[in-house]
Image 1: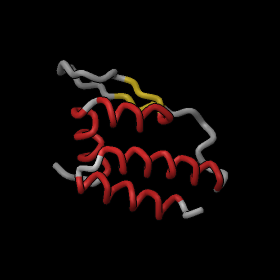
Image 2: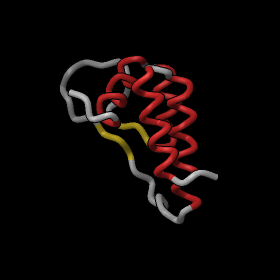
Image 3: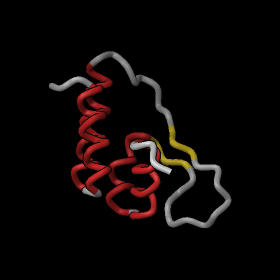
Image 4: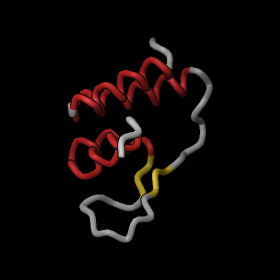
Amino acid sequence: MASSKEEWGRYQEALRRGDKEAAADAFRRYLAAKRAEGKGSSKPILVNLSSKAKDYPNAVPLEDIPKTMREKPEFFELMRKIATREK
């Protein structure tokens, strides 16, 4: 199994390419690698405090991020900007 840093790099690359399926799979592998390394035992939730109307929920558990990225293009774009540090 690859390290979480390697999986994070694969996730960022898939986001840059705009490949939703590859990004979702890479994020799932990243979470598994974090757990295998003994990290990530809490249940964090990604929360968006924006007041703009959007087609995805304000709070997304980490385990649901791959599914939400596949289903919601707006959420995928948000994750792409966050993970690749684009503006």
